[in-house]
Length: 241
Image (cartoon, rainbow, N blue to C red):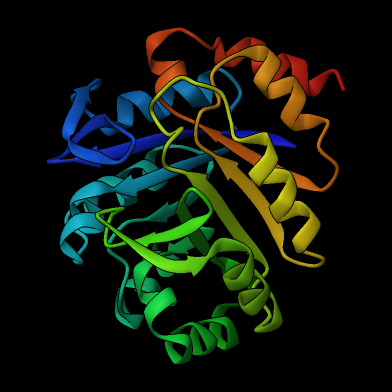
């Protein structure tokens, strides 16, 4: 398992939301590149970049920051937030994004997802952002009646190779991951690789996640910005396994 730092960008700055709530925002770095370099210097192999403005409004508006990080740093990037058309996906991949993260559009339009999987294969990742096991959409603003495990199985049958499972009740809350739901997803998926997100707060959280058979990666955000989790020590822990 690898540990991926999250860099959430809103109005060009690095922020974190509490449980996906745009009214409960904490500001961190004024420049995304500063945060990106910090985590890379501590051993990050990947960065998880999210355009929060795009997630909310449906149009990426911080793409230039993502591309700038790719140009300046030697690190693999997965990026999402407001990616709802083929041109944006194409532009990001051409710019060097290794995995493009889809959310709302993939859930609403299976044909769109199928076309992208045919074109880009393993470069496509779908993020299932969930509340109590149900999928949310439009930047976590609306909760659907779709069960995460059912949608995960459907996407796997379409050939999806990468999936992020985020528990939005845990995200930014420093309350620990939802191990039960993560295990449920791991038990459900046979071929699709899973990345866990939401609540990764302590070294013990990282250790427990790394012991979950089949979990490819975990994303951490607020905890490394506020010092609850020492990212360098977490990397050392994983490297020693």
